[in-house]
Length: 148
Image (cartoon, rainbow, N blue to C red; front, side, top):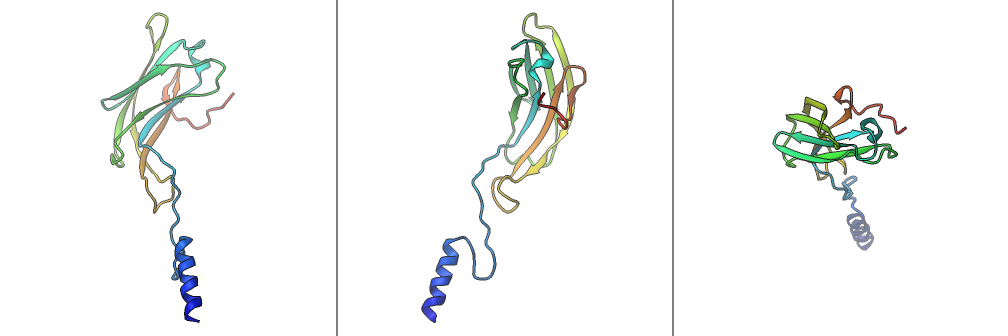
């Protein structure tokens, strides 16, 4: 009997379970703290017709707008992993690639939200926010962004 209990306890420990209840089994998905801006390249003209620049506090990233036949493009500005639930300034500047004309110049504040890609009791913890770059409205919510 003692040997059976020892075998069951060993098997439970090796599968991530404990004798006293279910243990936590974490996946290994990674995630960075960041602010993401998405857009439809077609909204900003032809292929690579604009340069998208996003700044969060003093960190900036930029890229060309992308191919007009791609449904969605994105740009991410990485933040410190331990930044926490703070509000950060976000600036979007879109310029025409051909003549450097400013197409969009917009500022917003983003409240970062806590994310747990592997579950609430597993690492990592990331802090994120997301926006849509819109040619008429600037930085808006990405909700409802159609892939068409």
